[in-house]
Amino acid sequence: MIRDENDFRALRDRRRFLREVGCGIGTMGLAHLLGAEGRAASGPADNPLLPKLPPLPAKAKNVIFMFMEGAPSQMDLFDPKPGLQKISGQTLPESLTSQLRLAFIKKDAKVLASPRTFKPYGQSGIEYSDYIPNIASCADDICLVRSMYTEAFNHHPGQLLLFTGSIQIGRPTIGAWSLYGLGSESKNLPGFVVLTSGVGTSGGASNFSSGFLPSHYQGTVLRNSGDPVLYLSNPEGVAAQTQRATLDAIRDLNQEHMAETGDPEIASRIASYELGYRMQSAAPEMADLSKEPAHIREMYGIDDPKTKQFGTNCLMARRLVERGVRFVLMMHASWDQHTYLNRDLKKNCDISDKPTAALIKDLKQRGLLDSTLIVWGGEFGRTPMVEIRNTQDPENAGRDHHPLAYSMFMAGGGIKGGQVIGKTDDIGFNIVEDKVHVHDLQATILNRLGFDHTKLTFRHMGRDFRLTDVEGEVVKKALA
Image (cartoon, rainbow, N blue to C red; front, side, top):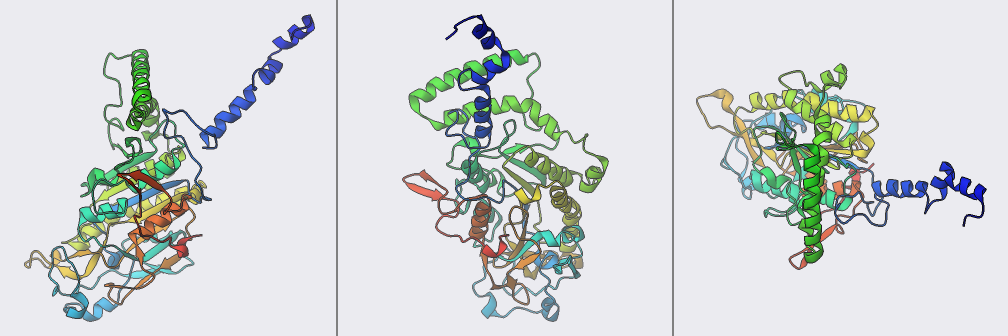
């Protein structure tokens, strides 16, 4: 109520007006900030990717999954097996191989010793191969799991099981589950981003699909050249004002349709259109590495033709998590060395070793490793037995698929580094200590993000589905 001229002048006072009008500008600002952190009671119906708080205390906010498609050879990189030297060239006893399922070789294939040399690294003294000295230099930050196993022994089923928890196509992937559970802190970039290098994966888009979850949870592939996303730029002659007006009209129509039908895919469509509009400025800026300091570029090897593609993806992964992207899937293909193991394994290591170590060290020096979980590995391992497809070439030796025992590693994001989990027998054929199934790995990743893997569910076709199906245990030894 205005009583006199003094009251009127006070009302006009800007600071008093901003402080007292309605609920106050400060309160509105606080509400906006709480919403951005996932602490608001609710958010706009047309933004299904608003960040959410996890139900449990979280150690990791982001995940970078470095998928080495095709299966790196564990006994040549991570799991030294001098016992192979003693029986190299011999056939394994039938009692050991009778239940073994193999993709290409026969069960009487000869044992192949590894020519690699191993030595201990860091204060932890964990042994790594001479092919990966840079990754080995991060030994005290790495939790090396030497006892991974899976049921799948071919690539596509193995990748489906690793990423979706099932060998049946059509299930959501771990990146989609993460986004479904937590939303995204990035307003101008997708919450789940896919970076590729090499020759392409067997699983393809099924490695980053949203499955039966709404489509806004699927991964978005960023390209290595040109526009980061296809068709991101406006066609020639289309002004920004025209595009905005068009999107506004489409959004209004979609909202009317959604109010009538309740179809969640319409919300996905609205969100994707709006995100695409915002990405037109954010994505090119994120992908522009020219402003990175020279020592960072050298650290990742992005000016070296050998490491350029993989190193660029590693640096992009760091820039993405800096900008709030929840899940980054890096897929490098292929480590499927059925032949020319020594030559082609070295080629892949020369491509990936330096940039992988750079990513770990760069995140650490920026204070981001504690909140970013890195996972590195393939869909299964390689056999201790040899595969030879050209008997006339002595360098032709390789290894077949082996699901019973292989290695992966994790770093950061609430994982205890400087340790080895699990142990295999003298020839790396079977696990003899602390078996870790792919469902256990999935449960552990979700645990670090603040979820009980048994309770992160989505109702589909009359029942509740989860990433780990009816299996999986958190690997407690891995937790910091």
